[in-house]
Figure 1 (tube, helix red, strand yellow):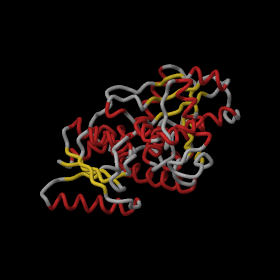
Figure 2 (cartoon, helix red, strand yellow):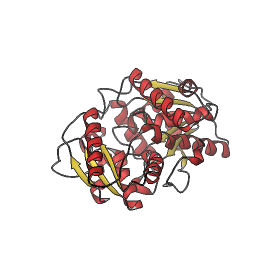
Figure 3 (cartoon, rainbow, N blue to C red):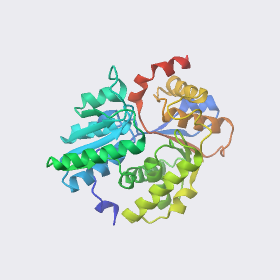
Figure 4 (tube, one colour):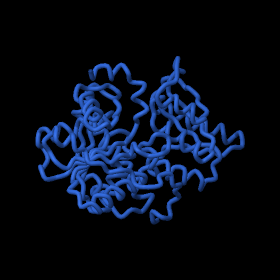
Length: 330
């Protein structure tokens, strides 16, 4: 199978900006630091999941689905961007949030409502139970005569950042930039696996740094490897799992006390991005990733002539439900 043969619904009209962070370069006394601004997409305030949604919605349309289903926590960027994509394409969307109904809607949850999604709260269940409920909800919709598509298959979604890696490489090549190191959040693995597959097909021009924001290093490595294996087998991409993982450097020392718990370094990174570059990060994913870049740059852990690129995967709306954390920055 060729990439052009895989169903895809275009949601991104042009490459996202590749921006030099000049004031951060001065602050860190290091040249050639860039940000790939995937937070700067017109749809739904942007973010990495839009790239995956191009392929998830392509699959949904191929299967003639007439209702989309997505599950996640109220802070989920995937749910928010699925709601935006559903609004843009005129499709119905059911969101299953793994929490009790909150007293007020804010951040991503507020946007889900504005985008017109149907929202159900299924209680504070774990990831496995949430998946079971989502599958049962799809079965119930089928019994009603509808044709649901469950968003989130990482095998399909990984192709979003396969194309993202190709896009970044084209930008670097066109501008003859010395970028050798790329920084991505280490989370559920879909984005990471996709980028590593694209990097492998290109011959691994980038070392890909993946600071975990959720799992320990070995768990994250296993998740990413499994997604690469399934996605390569399904799509027929010309690379191996070993080639993908050879370019990855996985960290868990930036995780702190766990998912959605800030560290001193991540709060400092959030403040520096805003005060030096006018770039807004959030607490869960991007600030810990940016903290990793800052730390390695400060310690001169990477060759001084190598350019660094932080991929801003979005999630900015979540910041507006994180006031308690932000107060600690000042």
